[in-house]
Length: 370
Ligand code: ATP
Image (cartoon, rainbow, N blue to C red; front, side, top):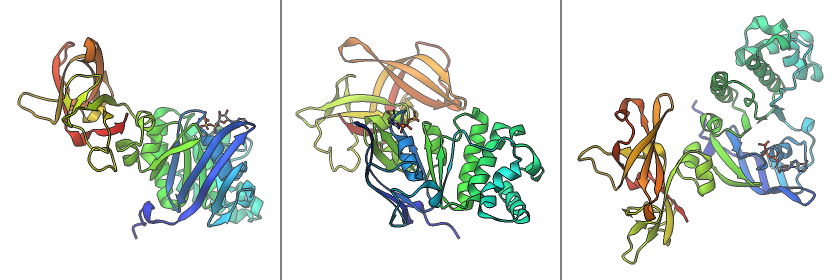
C-alpha cells in the first residue's frame, strides 16, 4: 500500500507555546508545532537560532520554561530521555570505541536483557537495513570509516525501536560525496522504517533532499513550516527567502495609475500578487523576487512579462549549471548585479561584456512585502 501523505497523518508530537530561557536570555521564544506521525521533519536555521535547544527539549534532555510538549496527547515536558519512545543520533555518534560493530548495535538489546543469540540475529538484521556487510559484525568499530560508523550509530538507534528518531547534525563532519550518499540512504531508511524523523541541520541542501517538511528557525522562533517546495517557492519573508537560496530582488512602488515601477532599477514591472492575497494585497511598496534559475536570457523575438537589459561580467560553473552575474543599470546611474542560472546545454557564448536581455514572467517570481 502507498503510505498516506504526510499531510494526512495524525500528530504524534505537539508543541504549544514552548519557550526556553537561560537566565534572562530567551533561546526559544514560543513555538507551536504539530509533528505528524511518520514524517521526516527538518529544522533548519542559522547558528544560534535555537535548534539544539528545541531538540534537547523534544528529546527530554531539558524541560521547557513555559508551554507544553505532548506525545500521543500525553504531556511529556519532564519525562527523561530514557523514559521516552525516542532516540537521539548525535553528531559525535557516541559509539563504544572498544566494542565491535555488532556489540555497539546490540547494546540497547543487552540493556533490555535480550539473550546473546537473539541479539546477534537482530544486529545482523539491522546491519542489513543500514547496508553494512555481515562480515562487519565482529569488526572493531574504530576500524570502520566515518560513513560506516554513521551507519552503526543509526543501526544502534533503530535497535531501541523508538517511535521518533532525532538527528543532531549527523552528517556535518562527513565529506561531500559520502554525505550525498548518506542523505539518500537516510531518506530510504525513513521510508523503509516508517518512523518519525526529526532532523536538525544548518544545511538547507540536506533539508531539501530528505524532508517531507522543513521548519525554519530564526532567533528562537519558527518562522515558517512547509514542504521544501513551499519554503523555496513561497517563503513568508526576506529572511526565509534569502536563507533558502540565492535571489534577485527588485524593489517596486505603485504609481497613481496602479502600475508598478522599480525603485532600485528603473522600469515598469508586472507584479505577481503576494501569496494568499487577493489582488495586490493592498501594498504600495514591495519586493519582486526572482530565483536565478527562473531568470531567462531572451533571444531575439522572445517575449516575457518583464525585461531588463544588462551586461554579463562573470560566470561560475555549478557543475551541470552555470551561473552568470549580469550588471544592470540601477536607478540613479549605479549598477546592480542580477544572477542568472542556465543549464550547461543553454550556456551563453563565452566572452565578458556581452549585452543580454534578461526576462521573467510574473508567475515565475514572487512578491514580498517591503
Ligand atoms: P548551532 O547551529 O550553532 O548549533 P543552534 O541553532 O542549535 O546553533 P542553540 O544551541 O539552540 O542554537 O542556542 C541558541 C541560543 O541559546 C544561543 O545564543 C546559545 O548561546 C544559547 N544557549 C543555549 N544553551 C544555553 C545554556 N545552557 N545557557 C545559556 N545560553 C544557552
